[in-house]
Image (cartoon, rainbow, N blue to C red; front, side, top):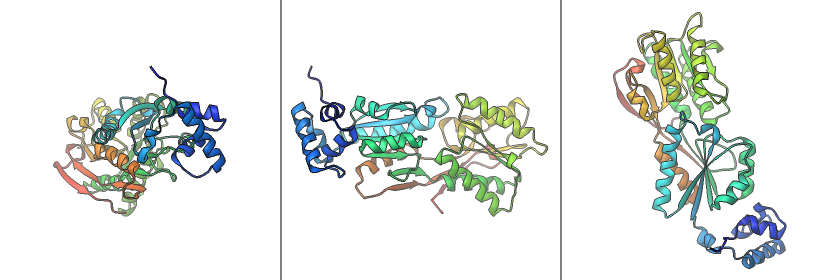
Length: 337
């Protein structure tokens, strides 16, 4: 079996960085013409497969997901996003591979292992990870994340947080708490901002104790349980919870059941994402629905950059079920900033 020549091999033979080799092969700026020609000559001599670059066509794609998401509580969301990417890859004859990544990993080594033509990065990524990805100089798109140097696709998290909270206010709830994760994640920050805007518009002012943000820990569900205990122990406990995602909302419902609290009579609960388990909950969970597979498809479309788009904002849909104290209904909610 003939060993394939990798970009890393060319970089070693040329005495330059992997990013420089990638720029030379793709005809991108940032190199002297002498350096570019030297790299191309070495690549040809080493037997590099230039057909990968023909017409700029993507033949191999690497899907990167942060290791902190590689847990049961996050996979109901990101597995659907990845399936959307896989659908688009299959329709375009692109081979896709998957790799969890964290701040202690070398992204360049991971890329060399998989040899992709493009990257899709899902969920939270540390700035240092994004900087390393940017240096690799492969086409890359972010999904459920925003950063200035990348094309990005996101659900309308702000509007989702706003309409979820407004819905609880319309049910007569006054002490609406937020149960969430660290605000380092772009999507969660946007949801919190929507929550706060709805409270502001309704003239509701709540003390900071009504906003629980659990730190990034390995056992996120236990941290959410402790957060719920904190909220229920307040002198005036909340009469509603807006949870940053459905897993957090289901944890809140479980704590209520253990404490003998009736949902929604004593505590209304709304989640976010509309994972399958939301409809199976008892009572069924009101939530903000995201077309997760379409989110993945949109990320792939950004890589092709057929229309020159850099940022896509996907509309969300409020799915009203029994957990918020209302009759079930569906409402399509378009971005309205």
